Image (tube, rainbow, N blue to C red):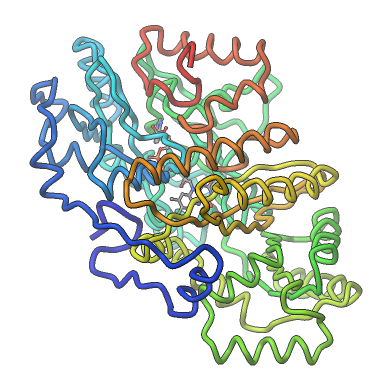
Length: 535
Ligand SMILES: Cc1cc2nc3c(=O)[nH]c(=O)nc-3n(C[C@H](O)[C@H](O)[C@H](O)COP(=O)(O)OP(=O)(O)OC[C@H]3O[C@@H](n4cnc5c(N)ncnc54)[C@H](O)[C@@H]3O)c2cc1C
């Protein structure tokens, strides 16, 4: 069973390896663990619902607590401390379009607000219940899960929006097909959530981001349904799918999602390389992104992330052997090395030829292949988030943030962001360990994905305050350098104040007008995507 207040499975040991504990003690100080509140105690103290049980929903206290939060750092602080602030007044579990329509209608009659709830993996406050004068209904889409139809001739598959990654791939696999969308949250996030947050999978360089995979579907809005046809291409004016992509529940509830699937490729691999320094790694990544190769991904860790990754997940002996091997291959100092992962997929001969071209590009820049590391990364890639549980239990908060910029802007932005995060808690005399990687590369630019770790404070409000200051400072750096406020996590409530810097006044007015058209009475997900007026 999933932890109610974390990421991993209940009962699975979330201890931090000793090596990692030592490293963090050295970098930010010894961990300062706090005591977690018990679920039963939170449920016992939950305020009374402002709604009554209806056919459309339940007001069960436990259910309401379990739907109060997602996976952002403020969500974690709330769930671990029991200071939830607000919980939904009711939880609905519709299983059909008609039931979704009924929930929206009853919510409107009761003056309630609605928060669509997919896998609840939002890290930007997308499903977070905030204090509100109006009652809140969380609409859990788990009951819509499943494959509705598969058109094998066209490769189009229709899924209920609440279908999670593993269920979706398992439904396609017998037909030899795949969607190939693998966000790190794959095991828990849903296809509906992916669409409305403009998600990027780890292998999106191959099949494309969810924008490219979303063929059409069905949305239930407070003023009526919207059907999105699956034309392979169209010149019939603006594409309405683009309104739904990234709408984050503000326009209504996406109930059906039609996706473009592809045949499972005969050959898929991830090869790992170590480059002698950041400049060589960047040059390699840019050069690969600008060629026409069957890439699924190029992932480049900064020297600090490379060292941290090896310390967090590696075993002492194999680490030492790898270090000796890299030294023997003339790779220069440990602390400057960068790990690069390159994914390829396609027909076997095409992948073999591309792998040869990648290896040549690596050799030309004096990099070295590290056999086995890429395979291990692919095997364990969805386990990495369990480290969040382990870090928290050891007294550390960890959060991530991401952006995308042109290649020319990257070096300055990356340096400024790293500096800002590392010194963000100087006033508290606390250190921050911050490191980054490029998670997705494009011909004209790249994403930059940063992780930062700091110590928990004894008072949860102080931990929250530390996070707020770091998040604000980092977001301001991103905006100042012209980066997008989100490459993949979406806007939610946490990024909403920064959206106008990117869209401009006319753009914001247009977005608000669209939201008003679908939801004139402001029923849907208030505070998400568009910051409340005057905030
Ligand atoms: C450990 C971890 C790793 C992650 N890695 C990635 C990654 O690699 N790539 C990436 O893109 N993201 C990643 N994320 C972020 C998150 O998983 C994505 O934003 C994901 O798309 C959210 O899907 P979900 O089903 O969990 O949506 P939720 O979190 O349930 O909801 C997200 C938003 O969409 C709305 N919503 C959900 N379903 C619907 C629907 N059917 N109709 C209308 N509105 C809806 C919600 O109200 C909310 O505003 C990660 C998150 C975590 C915790």
